[in-house]
Image (cartoon, rainbow, N blue to C red):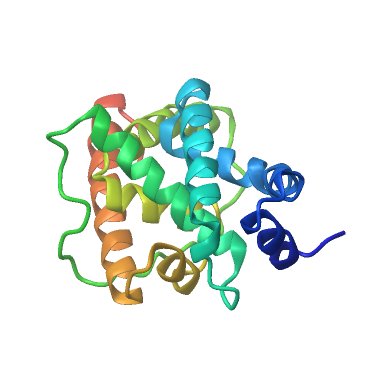
Length: 191
């Protein structure tokens, strides 16, 4: 298998087959990011196509000491944010100020049928609320909790300071907790 840096060099020199190999190799990752952000196939396809157009036009600017997947991930996240801004031009600013937050996960016993049904309802509410987050918070939350990336990886991919990523994650979790608390009260679930 040809390494990514070799394909990038060849594609930057006009080798369309090399670029096609890069697209084939990384399309699934880009589409997955776009779909998790847009929540529908049509928009995810549009975003994916936009990402690879931007990648093609920027191949000569790619730093060979950087990781190609991080670079593409950053382009994908920026394309997702741009897509959202085009859909709602009066959207909230992507980055606000909040205190640092560390999420604690504690293991619990296997849920019973009622708990599973309730968890399904909350899962739906959670997904709806994730889509309502300001773009910067949504991006960081998705990268951390859907993609499983570490804070440093998210910071590098988005070109942000790690502290900014932590603040965005904290703000997102805070908003989501509030929404789930309201959902818990309105659905009559247990805390």
